[in-house]
Image (cartoon, rainbow, N blue to C red; front, side):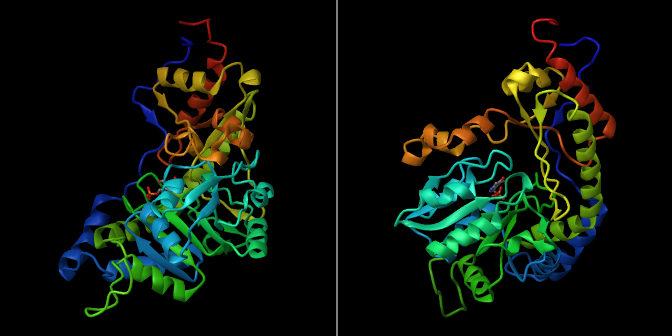
Length: 385
Ligand SMILES: Cc1ncc(COP(=O)(O)O)c(C=O)c1O
């Protein structure tokens, strides 16, 4: 440890959930108590659905109790089967959702810059069993949505997006949730916009919303008819109320994160061996969900794993996000596409990425100190103990 830099007094985690002023939330809870309506499409739920459709610029949206159930239902609603081509560089939920639908995930390598599914490699993974492409807008960077749609149209495939990281992202003022057949957003506590647990599906087609809304409520159409084997995916009124309150805090949180991101960019770009992906801001509205760097061990003088361990000594808890790859999990490593030879880029990137602390409550002084520590620790190996 470099003795001139002292560790943070309190642990600095990679994220910290944003919470509204308590009285703001309890005022909203009073509305629920007055209405005595706790779940099943109540007034808070209706309000949040409308407000989010507007905010995300999508024609139709369905709320869910979490993003994973939402994505399971998305696959059901499109009647996907056989094989679905997806990325190994994602959160476990993405391939697990396919398994829960009896679908075999087929792992496609990722783009060396954006870290999203590499659209130029998708075609080579298509077989007669393929029914869809499941892309993930990793860290909020959009997939090659136009290239993916072109392939899907040519082969008659469905397109599903895991947009868990992409809340509020727009491409040329078009909501990211309008691309493909359906997109899933997660409102987990760690997300920029959250409802403690929660999620949503978005789509352009009203029929699809109607089908999804049945599926997420046991398939119940009315007291006499159950249309299909549905599930319980409903968001309750307390979650929806929290979401409505959180919307008032969203823009302030986004601008704080923007400032933090800019400072990270400025300070880290001076450090040899540290890089980060910068989207083309001219056409994009960003999500400010994560701040992830890549560590080039040869140039930086220390591996990602060593940097992760060093930062802990300073009370900084970064995350190796996403490591390991989904293709390395015991439940998927037997799949032919999980073979390392098929995924050279994903394997390299998974060994380089590190998510740094990133939330509106992080002070700019703390960001400066984190960057100073990163800059200094590489000289520490073998020098300071
Ligand atoms: C890429 C991705 N997909 C899916 C999920 C699952 O969402 P949820 O936690 O809302 O079920 C997450 C995590 O939160 C995620 O990061």
